[in-house]
Length: 416
Image 1 (tube, helix red, strand yellow):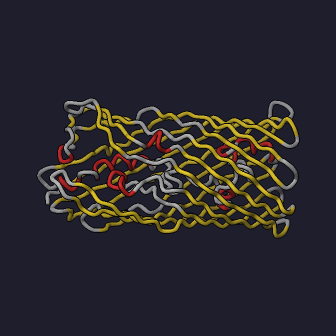
Image 2 (cartoon, rainbow, N blue to C red; image 1 turned 45 degrees about the vertical axis):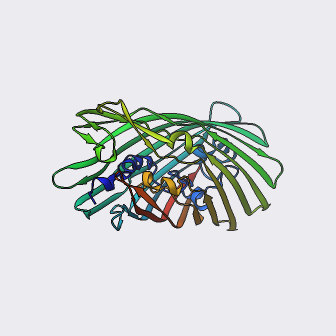
Image 3 (tube, rainbow, N blue to C red; image 1 turned 120 degrees about the vertical axis):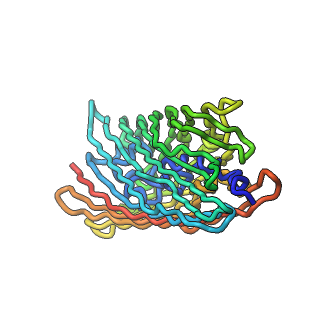
């Protein structure tokens, strides 16, 4: 069976790897929380802000915190396998860093607060290699970095409610390759030279404290619209997939971040105990239904890759308890529906975005003189999918993917 035929849908999956621009295969490619307080609460923070990274998730939460700054660093350890039709192989890239920081201070007038958040991911992606791929050599590679900074302003006109606005300024880089080399010919997509794009969007949010025991939170994040990702390539060939070939020149595509809505409620049974519940809707269909590659293709202006992501519903639960005046412990659970259907697995095979169940634990220690130390750990339970890949000449081959995740981090903060 020719290796070119077996690349039928795998070539499309190569471009889909760009979609890991935040590379946490958790809620699609979105982090469940920014910083260690949010991760310890499993992302259930829209109504329960705890550190200045709330500027990213719900900027209205800045009005409920004292002036402070925080820096977080975490390690992300995904374990991934895939079967492209010729046996299971593992990814060779399994360790990534995720920095984050936030700040908050009163500003400009009474009841106004200025702050901001930042987070980034470095070198995310996958690296699958199979030397004996039906007489050829399979290379599936992606390397993606993402950064987002969100300056924010919150206003608290009354003691029981606040509103906030954040401007999302984003930067992403991506390089990828999905090819089969038989020694005589190479087929697939090869856009391995790294490129970058800038994006802009906004977040608005609100919080309302019904009484001393119940607080509501709501946030809306607009799509982040990016400039094109552009690549220089000498030759592209999708002929084995029944598609066109492309000559030397510039190829480009867009990868925008989806809009989303989050609503939450936080309960405070006692002054020491918080229980937070949250629901999220993420509009993946708008940005990840089809992806177009524009360039000097023969006979057409672009090639459309049908990824067919579904919109996603996410449920977050988090709780924390202050054991002593210097120690607070927390934990949580996050469930997100899988945005990829088994019928579309072939087009998303090297896109590790299938995770559904996550548990988290964390703690904060008051170190004195305003300093705090926060730790968190997340585990995403193994998720597997299987399907088939159609061949141009008829028939199909079985394919599958499997993934689990671990994440651990530490955050240091200072309250002014």
